[in-house]
Length: 301
Image 1 (cartoon, rainbow, N blue to C red):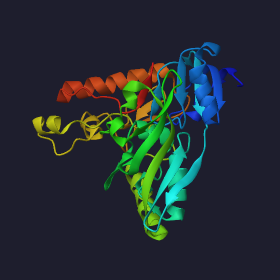
Image 2 (image 1 turned 45 degrees about the vertical axis):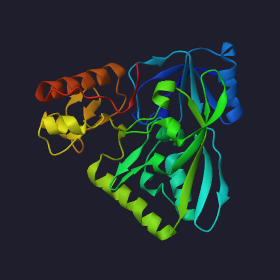
Image 3 (image 1 turned 45 degrees about the horizontal axis):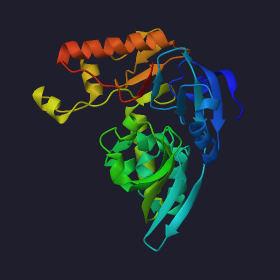
Image 4 (image 1 turned 90 degrees about the vertical axis):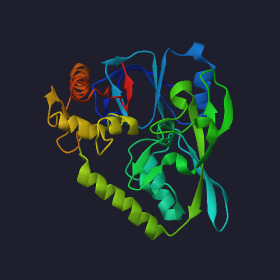
C-alpha cells in the first residue's frame, strides 16, 4: 500500500479543520482493509479510520500513527421480488449517492437520508436520522459484515448493534463495517424523489448551507431533562440560542446565526480556536440550564 507522509487532511473533512496526517493511506477493497488489521505490525500505530469526513471534529493539528481513508465502493442487489429487494453496500459508499440510486431503482426506505454528506459505514455506526418524519438509517438495516481490531471478519444481525439515538454498539467496540445489508420495499420513484427533495428544502430553510461544518454538533437533551426544565423542546440548538450564543466567534470558528447547533469554519480555522469555542458553549449552557452538553460528532483530540 502507498503510505504518504504528512498528508493534508483538510479537503477531506467537512468542517475543514487544519490537520495533517503523519501517515496516510487510501483503501479501495475489503482485502486491503482486512490486511491493515490482520497485519498491524507492518504499519504505523495507532489507526484512525474514516470515510466521508463528516460528523467529525479534529481538535489537534496532527494525527499520529496511520490515517486510513475508506474508499471501498461496492453495491449489488442480493435478492429481489415484486415487493422488496435486499441490497448489499460497502461501508465507504456515499450516503447521498446510494439514496439517489435507490430512488432511481424504486427502492423505498432511505430517501429521507438524502443530503447527508457521510458514508454508509459512518451513518450506521452513528445511526443517522431524519426527524420529519422520524427515520433512522437503521430502520431498514438487517445485518452487516464486521471487522474487529484483530482482523477477524464475522456477520452480525441488527440486534447486535443496539441502535439508539445517535448510537450503535460500534461506538464501544470500534469494529469496522465492511458491507451492510438493507431490505427495501418497491415503490414509485417519483414519490421517493419528492420525499428526498422535501428533506433537502427543509435543510436549506433551517440549516446553514455552503459553508464548512460537521452538521449538528451536540446531542439533543433527554426527555427527562426537557421535563425537569419545563421546556417545549429537546433541541440542543435551542439551549445554545437561549444563551445568546448565535454568531459567537473564536478565531475563524463561529456558532451559526441560522441554527445554533452548527459550528461553522469561516476559513482556515485553527484547532485551538475550535476547542475554545466549544468550551465556551458548553460552559454557558451549563451555567444557564444545568445541562452538560454532549457532542454528537466524533471528537479527535
